[in-house]
Image (tube, rainbow, N blue to C red; front, top):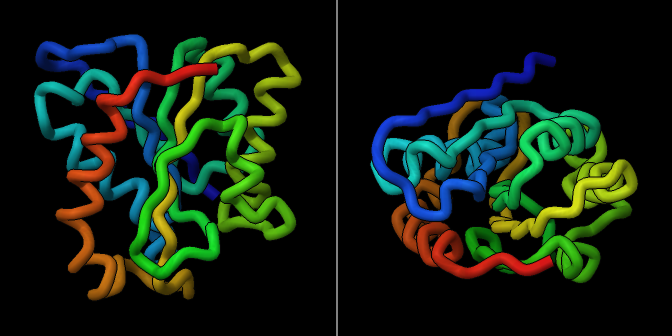
Length: 169
């Protein structure tokens, strides 16, 4: 399982201390949505310096990255929130247990909730927002589903709106 961290630092940015982190796997259909949203967002000067990609990251990699960065973060990922497929929610990590099913294992091994809990236990004290997207399909294949591609422009606009909200711990 390869983990890649991609950073781009060109262009002026607002709230430079907040990282926008795409999570997912390019081999799980809609599990790629977090990676793809942040990849596209990173192409805009306003967001470029804040975007990070954690491909196929498990809970330990999420925790390790948060501890290394020591700054606020917005995590973007496919998440089973029992919503209609293609819907998104933005919430703080303190509300994560309300939206994320902690009893299910994600394609990252253990999920976001476990990674955040580990980071918090190890002293990470920065605010975290989670932008979750309910997937249509997580079967092992490359590329987003046609339904998710149709929702992509709206999801990107919703993510940009979420990035403008202040994060609170």
